[in-house]
Length: 198
Length: 198
DNA sequence: CCTACCGATCGGTAGG
DNA sequence: CCTACCGATCGGTAGG
Image (tube, rainbow over all chains, first blue to last red):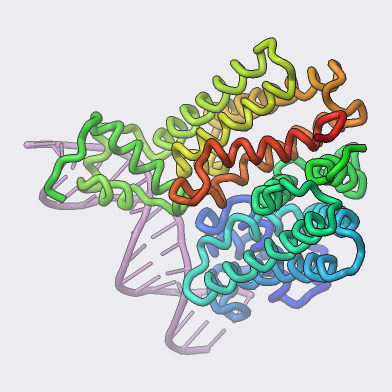
């Protein structure tokens, strides 16, 4: 309480608190008073550092998507075999989720409450992320390492679904670490794509 | 507007409208005034038919979970081979999502806003649903039809994740129907579990 | 199902 | 970052 946890600017502190609350109670379920109270200031004082509630959301979501996007795009454009790239992308995604479960929940579910240009920007990032995975799967099918009859779209949706479900069950305090969970998830998802088993 | 769409009781009509709105804008993002307006009555009039906002949510969520649960439990307890049972469970889940995307979204994400006994009941249903899938996977590993090195928990989470992501991308108006999507999803997810490919 | 209304709370602002 | 406050809106109720 009396210890100052400010290693960051007040603005960054507010964003951290908002990320936590938006992830836990949702954007519409969180009030500016909740945020102010958790930060330790009165509600009106927040507006010295931020423009408004949606600004908080769009900054959290944009930064979160950019993180996922940058990693996936880098991996997708590598010249490594498709199965290796897919494994790397899966493991990096799990690692990012383990880093901050709440941030991931906000990125996955709260972007719907953005409006106008903020909303449009997210739709684009979402599509880009998907395309990085589609590129890997397409390459895998073309090179013969993945099954020729694989439905590329369904396969990518299955992989993204499995990844995006991770924050619902993974706990960094659990018996199995993020590295190992990513490996086992990759084992299962990879085999669903491969041309020949084990 | 002037046509009466009441094939149901007023109460059922309210529940339908609430399902749609909770799915679209979330529980905390939907007001009783939103619901009243979509139903076509004044806000206070809703309370002649329902107890309150949380009652609406818990009825929608409970009924939704029960539907998923009953189907999965029935399939899991069949004596068919594990791969057949898993395929059936996947297809039934996709069919249920196709029946009502909004209801599924409420079941998956809005139950967090329930409190007390309503919340506890959902946690239990959630666990039961997962256990139906775990039973199938366990049987498959024991009978040798699934890989012996398969991580049962991770495999089930991957399958549930892929299934629970379906409402984010599947459209009944799309080019591929629910039946076919379920089949292709099962193809990919099944192969991720099987002992020998193709 | 409507009229009329309750106390509480919302996001945000003016002025210091 | 606080004091003091704004108009709007919230879930819900009394009485018919």
